[in-house]
Length: 604
Image 1 (cartoon, rainbow, N blue to C red):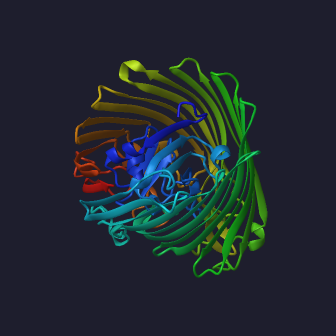
Image 2 (cartoon, rainbow, N blue to C red):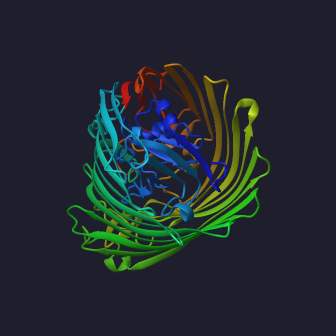
Image 3 (tube, one colour):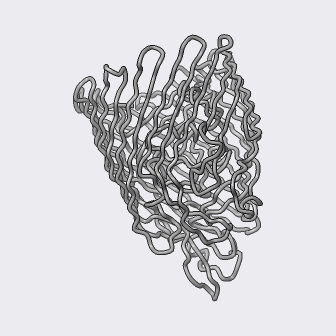
């Protein structure tokens, strides 16, 4: 990670296990600079370096290179991701805009989930878990070979639980449901020739949970039915390492009392990674994306095609100095077919006949001043394309998408420093950054059309942030390990009056993370703490279109896990989250209850 031309954190499989977490947001909450808002047992939103909100659209989430964020709102439903924690090799967290390096909509950052390789790794595990909130869970992962050249990994899991029973208005309580999850995945990797491999992936997930939606900052029951299919062919040629990938994501999303959505994403991409001499590495790429969205009962569809080309140049200037430049150009062609639900619509289908072309840039200089000291200077320009709902379909009789809405442009300047410190058997890391967000998007009351009041999505202004992060980790001896981190961020909004956004007050100024781990024989124990300073968030208490400010006091979270290895590969563990309080308010939603889990996991 210290050699990468971006600010990156790597969470290993060992780190994941020792958190005692049952979901990915609880794992990411331990990363310096990450913002997590948990709305219930199942639903959570995650952002990098502030700007978190319901259905946070700024984070690109990948599983082995396939996007798993949902394009209807451009958001990630973490419960829906079809991966079990026991099959994850590592999670890479990349901070800041990285659309030129990682692709479409990676403006806040990237979370890349990498699973065990079915051809090379042996990952066999069964886990059962029970806990508070009526939590009942089971999951399993297995890998096996079909001869010497074909590897298979199968995984499945699910849980049922009761929703938090904390303070809610009568309207909220009526729209809250108990969460459940079912997920399955199959991965096959074949060595076709000595120089080529073919990979195939199929996934399925079904989830029910309560969420806070961004249209009205109100709670609603949500049901997700998703599946995906992916094929990747990689071949080592005289022209470099060539990789072609095709995948399709299909999602049916039901938001009770609002609408039912069908979203299909089809992606085909090819890239070639090659070297010129010993000091220059290049990657050239091309991508096509087809994105379609329909709302049940409207007989209408909004869609866009995106044609992308990109390139990267990694130049090892000297043994100590390297330069990485990446550029990507996206050309979007928007369209809409079918009727509007009312004659009062402010747009026609002809208004959707438009194109958008935007470049993305990433540039980074890495200087290894000594064997212990590394400096990093980076610049990035990221592009956040409007979601399909922001662009297009009528969401009710008065709320419309906007074909003229512009992408949000996120620009980031950053200076980082990392040092290996023998005295603590670890390292320290710092970074300072300045970020601008131009043409921020939100729902906005727009006016009258054909004699009727309407609201639409629009660009509502700009916002900027300045931040500082510092972290350290090390070992006291062979048994004890520790980590500590601090993040400061100050956001300044310049938004139009009436915009239902308040990043300036809703982003915490101060966040502190700390952890202590102990291992001895068959025992291992971890305790983690998080402090977040007070915020002022927007909330809708009556499930209408109006919102008001809501004070969220500063809070401290403590989680802990104790595990004991009964025999080789079999571990019983007790873990707890929000250990010090029965319940605590962490955002403008209902208070979060303490969660305690007892798990039995066997790897074989």
